[in-house]
Image (cartoon, rainbow, N blue to C red):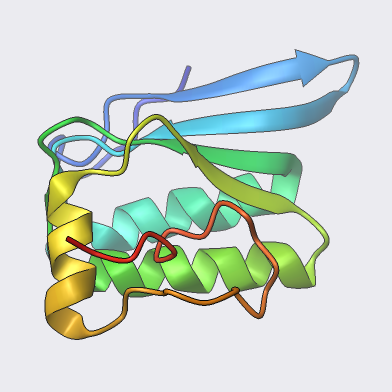
Length: 127
């Protein structure tokens, strides 16, 4: 378990699932805030996770506060994972905040993702 430095508001843990000497899965908790003030730390955790793990999983807090920068970082991480032959997914329900943001920004997906990620963060049709 790793506690990120910095704001303290961003995230409370990163969990690694290990098999042998290799990281198979890394779970990153969203923390309470994924906003412009905290997104740089979150993006760095995603970059590190995608560099070392075959699968990076986001575990969203139920009432996580987000802004449009979170949508941009999640989509970018999905594209990066796909290009590297890795998985970038989430578990559990998507936060209502993310659903509303994507709808307000016009970025919700109703069609098949060109990245072919069945766990696309925007492929939910909005609210």
